[in-house]
Structures are given as C-alpha cells and as structure tokens.
Length: 135
Image 1 (cartoon, rainbow, N blue to C red):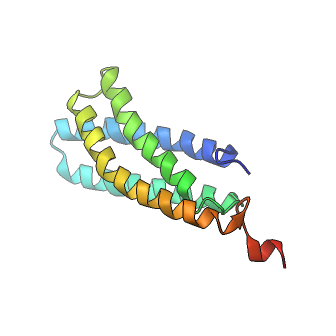
Image 2 (image 1 turned 60 degrees about the vertical axis):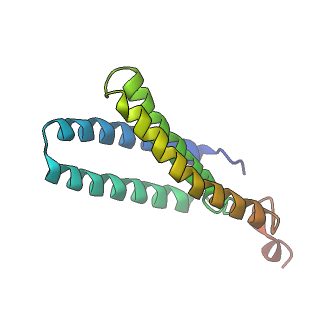
C-alpha cells in the first residue's frame, strides 16, 4: 500500500470541506460575538473530524503507518485552509499568523509521531507485522 492511497485522499477531501466550513462559521460567530455557538461549533467540528477519521481509517487495511499519514494529512489541511481563506480574502490576515503559530506547536507532536513511525517501520515488512507475515 502507498502512503497516499484512496482512503487518505477521501479523508483529505472531507477534511478540507470540514475545515473550510468550520473556519468560515467560526469567523462569522466571532464577528457576531456568538460565544456559545463557537463552543458548540468546535465540539461538532472535532466530533465530525474524529468520526470521519475513524470510519475511513477502519477501511484502510494497511496499519504500517500507525496513523501517521492521517495525522500528517490533518496537519496540512488544518494549517493550509485558514491560510488560503485569508489569502483570498474570506478571513482576516491575522488568521495566517494564528495558523502558523498553531502549526509550530502541533509540529512538535507531529515530529514525535514521525519518530515513532520510523521506529515502528523497522518492525514491519511493507507495513505488515513480521510475526504475521512469517506465521
């Protein structure tokens, strides 16, 4: 299996739609000072993202990446969407700074996940556990 497969592409597509919708609604609610709505929106966004990853990830039979490919996809989408929306004028430019600062701290966790992925990769043959292959 490839690092980028049809499941990752499906997940990325849904993630882009979810993130774009979330960012635009978040900005609208911030502008209107609907703070309770922001909390509800954030919970719904997190739940939708989690459920999407869970359902699509279950269909992806290849476990050798230990979720790193989904984590990296989520990182790229969540950093890129607000930057693109701010660049084309749908969000204020300070969203770019916020996305980049979030990316720095999130990048630390992503780096740790990458290290664990590289260590785990040595225990697998093309993503399948060596004990399962040679049973």
